[in-house]
Length: 375
Image 1 (cartoon, rainbow, N blue to C red):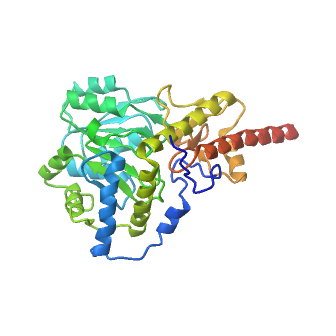
Image 2: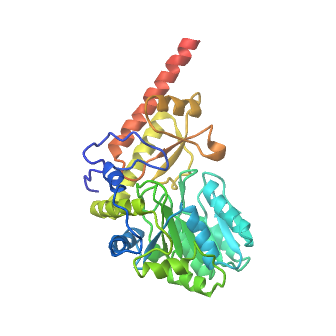
Image 3: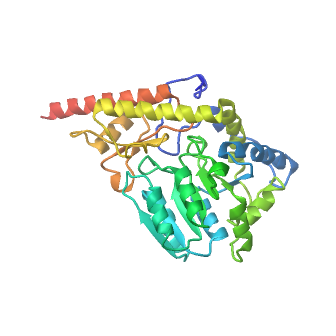
């Protein structure tokens, strides 16, 4: 890993550790103020053409990678309504993977779910067993489950899906693309997606995704695909360096700048930096009596959910940190009151993560002091 200065001259100074939206570099925020353009103008096509040239390099695909003016959830729905008519197999090991399965059901698709405990990764053998029971049109999976800080072996899951079925594989890589290895083409991911506000380190409001030839062929055969989320339209307009509907122009200016930044760091260097941040959190947690929720070998490089030691209240810890001017993340859903989540992704540097972890020690000391005074 190179000594890449991700904080533009201020290593160790980031104080924003939400699991998303994440901290955004000042240069990216400045890029949002670009001039208004018609999205059918040559100037826009020049801008979007640059993005379409660079974006596939992050997704590791030889095909076009796209943008959509929605959250990443919009691409969940786009993949389902554009490509799928038959049964869906949803792999659920946390809040967001569960919601994707719920979405398939709400769309009227026959949906089966393989459930794993929160904190567990998706097990390829369980997927293989389920695929043997029934023919599925698509399988949905979350690579890095933001609610729990668990990363599953997406390459192994993809191998099982492709060797044991003809199902399309839809992968939510919201907290993994641009933060850890995601190989769209090599692993055979049919739709892989993220949101701008995670490891891409942009403001929220933009979905980024890639679609395989196989998924696009399925979409072209489907009679009813809706309009706004139609993958066939999105790809056809991308060929003209345009979007089918009005894009979020400020975020595209920011994306253009940020792609240059990501590629200058080097995608593999970026993965390594995220790995170093994960290790810093793991080592600190072990020294200070915190337990990582994710099972061994499945710790996400971008977000960690921690269970504090006995006697330390997670909600009070977060409240104390906020009082110390740190932006923190609470546990998610049923873990909200018992866990703390640390978002260590995007352009944050290891020194800033270490400073944030030190602040946890100071916060706990303050909490003990107050408790002693009250007694």
